[in-house]
Image 1 (cartoon, rainbow, N blue to C red):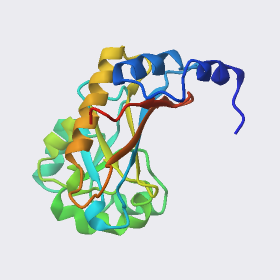
Image 2 (cartoon, one colour):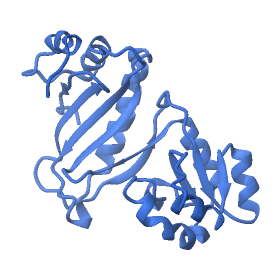
Image 3 (cartoon, rainbow, N blue to C red):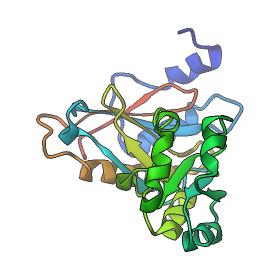
Image 4 (tube, one colour):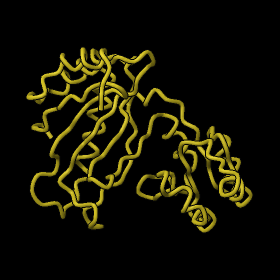
Length: 229
């Protein structure tokens, strides 16, 4: 892949043979941001897990202390009292059965996170083929299948992010925006790492965290030392 001049200049600031301490990596990630827009700061964690085995899967969620810098649209599947509870909590869309054809047939996907009460999972399950591949399926481990819709919506709006292994056993998550000051990005990064370390499956043999890379949407990757984790 050919990179532009700005990227190449930014890449010169990064020593690829070095694993930087988190604070240094955060400072560098801000310096190497080259795009004209407010880039997202991303973390990519290569694990020693084998996601083909259920007992080595990692999936969960963490509330970043300083949010992600992105406004998130939440859709809640609920019925009865839970409808007004979700609306009061600030959900962008709330509904039930009637939303199925809109999503299935009209391709409506104007939301970032889906929350459902357990009694609605039979309905939501019919959307598995649409929501599943997009990573939007509600899941109890991520706190998105719950009766406490107020907490779920509040956490998501406050900057809760989900993490999970991809097919290559890597976790990719946002930890803020380039416009955040360094302390905020680092605080978010540490909150994420604490959650990932706690989520280590007991079945994993050998090294759990193989590498951690910090980057902006368009910028070069910066290796972070795994030593303290």
